[in-house]
Length: 318
Image 1: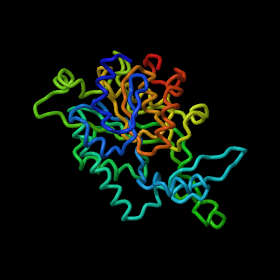
Image 2: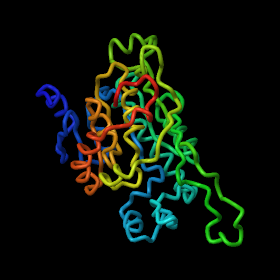
Image 3: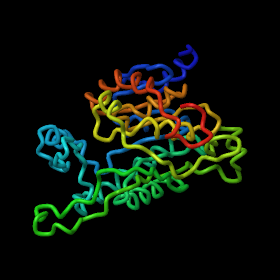
């Protein structure tokens, strides 16, 4: 990493534990506090996968998941010799918790609007059950809704028989099995009278990077479930595959330069995707165990090759 690039990241470290990894920076902090402290209008894009249930990453819920007790986490049964990963019960949220979820994302959106450059995009992972609530909250906070990126992937969410009544209703599923993951696409509004071209010239933001000169970025991406080799590197329940994230961070910087942030860093997979492409990313994580894991996981994930068959046709090797 050049001295100039390293110096540019100093304004984002403050007094938090942090570490430079390649072109990027990881910070051990609460993202709400961190976003409020960084210089305004500095981030070019955000790519993140937040805790949609808000409470699933509370320490008591993490302990229950680790002990196999579940709590808000559903512990699926093993079958065919395969152990399925725990998944959070988003449908377990009561009205009070849904209100808290809405307030959480309205406030987060306000902080993001302050931190982003005008025209900066936000890619935010979601799920079919809660996306309507979360996306509306982000708009209430000041972000502009620009559509969705549909990650086509057959997950293990949904399709389960009614809890504690599986034998009584064997031919019923409480929700359909999910075959896609919606990612909300948002943008900080452009200043009045400014075109996308003006924004690109002044701020380096406003649009998305094309796949090639002849092909725009697509809002549907055929994806894989996260490979075992990546899960062995980063043991995190919400780990997204590098084959998908590298396409996302590539699109997030329309001119191929700038600062991407992941305020809910988790496994460090977004930072790793940026590192693999030679881009700059700042990851923020409040849980010490995940922060420590990222130090080792990010370089290893970034070094993994991605099969070209998993990328949009026309993309360069990622």
